[in-house]
Amino acid sequence: MPIQQLQSHLFNGVYADVLRIDTIHPIISGNKWFKLKYYIEDCKQQQRKTIATFGGTYSNHIVATAFACKEAGLNSIGIIRGETIKFLSHTLQDAANYGMKLQYVTRDLFKNKQAIQQHFDNNIYWINEGGYGIKGMKGAADIVALSATEKYTHIIAACGTGTMLAGLITTAKPHQNIIGISVFKNNHSLETDIKSLLKTVHCSKPFSVNHHYHFGGYAKHPKELIYWMNELYSAEKLPTDIVYTAKLLFAVKDLCNNHYFNKQDKLLIIHSGGLQGNLSLPLHTLSF
Image 1 (spheres, rainbow, N blue to C red):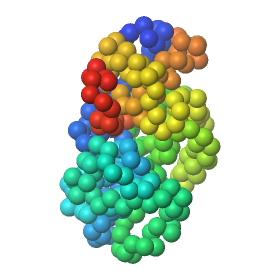
Image 2: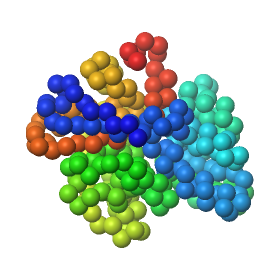
Image 3: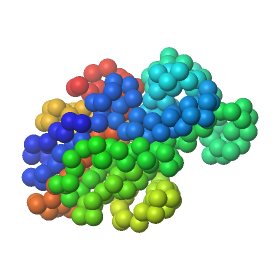
């Protein structure tokens, strides 16, 4: 997978590479395919015909699941957080175009996944929000396993459910520090959720999560973030998305400029894809 070295002044002279897994597929980009592949494999082995999963209006996981199911010859259902909306986001429109049936539930009911599942056929194969689970973690572990990453002292990724970070932790070398940047506001259970996954594979490696770069919450994108996305693209020709990677790269830049890292450190930043989320922005908001 391609690695892009960051060379501008923005990162204060700290060596930083970006693992561009966003380039592996135009639709199932970044970490989404890695987190889905073992679920889809298991679903087909069980000879089930339909996959259902959960997500929000701007969920990259939803659209990736819809496309992956279409390619695999499976039906798909998306349980969407929030009441029915008049106009679909680009993300949900894409999911619907790929054949996913969208079912809207209230935010309160969305929190009770078991209650939702009781209203559906028992033969449906369920995947947690964001691919959270052992199979999602196993798939995410392949991200680093398929690349030459031994030279890096730090591996840094954005976090939603923590599934990808858990996978990265399981394959990290002893000398490597794993850092997650949470994109949710008040995501207090994130560390516990990650540890729960790691416990299933008897992994007790240390990791850290930074909760200071959510920019107001999931998918929030104030002017400061948009300015940063354009500045970064101008300097590095690196496209980012409003939900995950723009906040991730801003966090790395800010930490570099506040001397969190040493000059001898080597950073690997995981670009987890999801660029289609930018389609919800007005035209010409971004320079790429």
